[in-house]
Length: 292
Image (cartoon, rainbow, N blue to C red):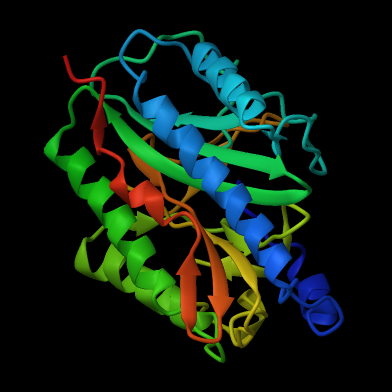
């Protein structure tokens, strides 16, 4: 589940007093890795059944069943954010122009062939969080859909490679924006980004996917990563615009122009040797699911 930065004045004032959570004990690293792997496993199980005709409610119920089978629970269900009711779903299920935070009850329309479905799954397993998203095409995909999906995955991979010890977060944004916008000519949505995590779903630092225009826009941009830092990093791309919209106090966030969007998210542990992608297994999943 993506992070939204707090008021920038507050972020600037508190960045030195609220450090990112770091883990060094081998047992804690094992537990964080196990929570991330649980997220990957739920995705693996879902792709075996995803197809046209399923409703979001049916998919979300399946997510809940898989989490229970793994001895985990949803990190999203009943999650509270200021200005919103408790989040009603086990997972975020975002279709086509819904960028993030899609809920199981936002539509009763079954999935159709050609839809893009972004599935964001958060787990709590033995007190540790796993949080990662992936986008799938249902049964077939247009050239535009395949292109934006590949841009999302490639920008994520390029960004993860920058998350080494001592490196500033701004290198992540430069790499992601370089692939998604400068090479592939899509748009990274503005105002949303990744976050630190660990035993809590959201924590500092905020991880923007785009370069800041001025220092106050992203106070964490020059934060240098320390070994043991856990980050949930997540490019969110739109085919038509960087702008987003939402409706009142409802959770789903859409592209402002109704264009296609994708969402890819990885859990990364910064180690002394470099970034360790705890959800690397997601890259093995198929682009297109439910083929007949």
